[in-house]
Picture 1 (cartoon, rainbow, N blue to C red):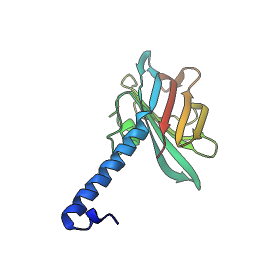
Picture 2 (spheres, rainbow, N blue to C red):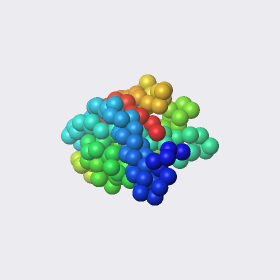
Picture 3 (cartoon, helix red, strand yellow):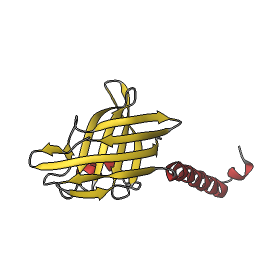
Picture 4 (cartoon, rainbow, N blue to C red):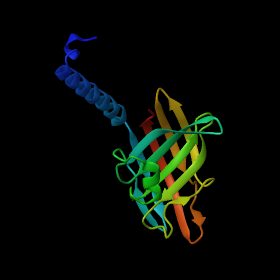
Length: 165
């Protein structure tokens, strides 16, 4: 053990230094994160530039990764998936992907122009070229064409690259 971390005052300093190092590593991993594209809802397109990937709860014994792509930054959010559901991130999409085949097992779309925002749309969003390699998740999410959901219409065309913790 480092002799500087042996006395009580130094222990606090060492603890704070360790926390600072962990935060720097986490922010450095996210520094290369990027998103581009848009969600169009009822004719109004909104560009999304923020992405956050997180480990998800296992689904039927399979590992899951959760992805949030949003208009507003979700890096400070305690629960970005819920923030998408309740319109706290502007236009946004949250997706749960099964790691073994990158299939979509959960999806919520939120947009200020939707009459019902925070809508569950499993089966409407298609993952394209989605890959998990070297701790990074990248690919595209698309609807390929406009989707009608009751009396709303939306379309998704997004690309992303994000570190997965």
